[in-house]
Image 1 (tube, helix red, strand yellow):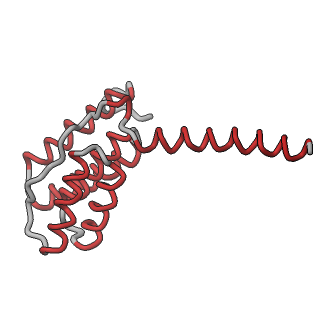
Image 2: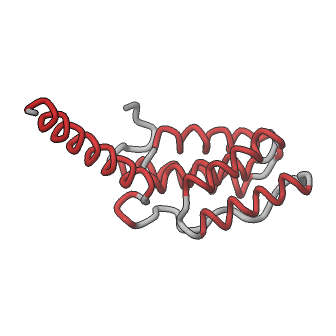
Length: 145
């Protein structure tokens, strides 16, 4: 009998802990998104199927459903590896969830593609957004952490 009570207490504590972690993962950092809107205009043509997934990702992003948006943008990245905006928006979604290391990876991949395309305004935008992420973390731009 004592074992059953002990197990129920331990499982309740574990359940509450896991529930809190899932809840924190599913909501934007501080309930306020650093980047409220995704990039919606594509710099290169993509297939109709990838475009539909990209638009679904943008809609999920705008609704604050960042994990769903990341899933859609990841599908676009696989189908259209030159689509800088899929990497860009995925990075912004990760930033809004507070997963800054993944956000930086996505934004760096986007900047690489923008650079290859010669899309300087978007390259400048990514640089500014990386600085915003660094500023939120209290890291000076250009400093190693």
